[in-house]
Length: 341
Image (tube, rainbow, N blue to C red; front, side, top):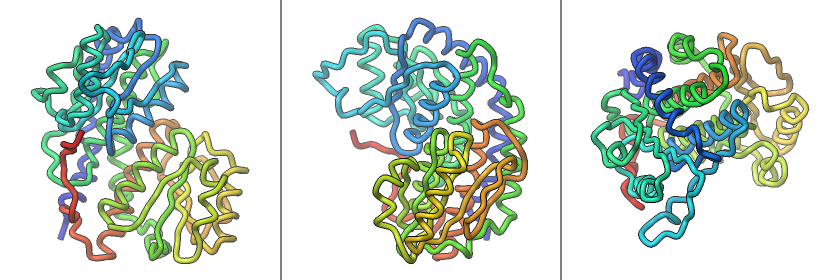
């Protein structure tokens, strides 16, 4: 039986196409509001926080802009946080996460521009925002976010493009590419049989690939119920690699920021520890030494490679969940909306 999660994964390309024009117009208005900001502060949680980390890398690479990730617990009643010079971007799919709303409200109280990224234009976050980047995906019933994450990635990419001296390449092609990648991934084997997940899966990457690793590991935990964790590859090589071993798998996310030398070090170290190693990389890279590889079916820009890898990761989580007999659409003990502060 086809799960709702699978339908959501398949629908992402069409949804990105539907919001592309209006989303770019919203991004241009947001860019105007952020023009005088000396740095950007992003407030988010969960999958939204993984999208925020992606934005941190992309804005740094394209705009040379410092992007800080907010710690919501510091922004509650009586907060003394000084947001002088900040442009605040608050991301919440529901628009109702109290910690995120408090960051936005404090920024508003201090006269700083607030850009809300949400799937609900009537939410408290939308109300307090100067400009809303609407995710516009409609209801997402499945607990594990897929289409809202992809739309958030697109919205943040559009914002960077609107703030840049010239548009970033590949924005117009993104919806069609994601549709093709999703269709391919849902019909592919993806080496699921090579995952040794009895003791867990570790996902590592660098730059944009680190944000991908964060999101893919979260999806594996949520959907498959498998212990999964993520690291920046340099941090992983520095110490945590020593805690993995037999009955564990390494999933290496390869993007432009990850050199062959560092990738090889991660692969060789993991294999020496007894781990199964898999690499997920774009069509224009060749990487040797892993037990299995997943190669994206087409070439694309590094920032969009990241989202394509996330989509493949969504399918990996789905197939692993099916392998272990998990209730895919309603994983136990998980809730759709984060309501805790």
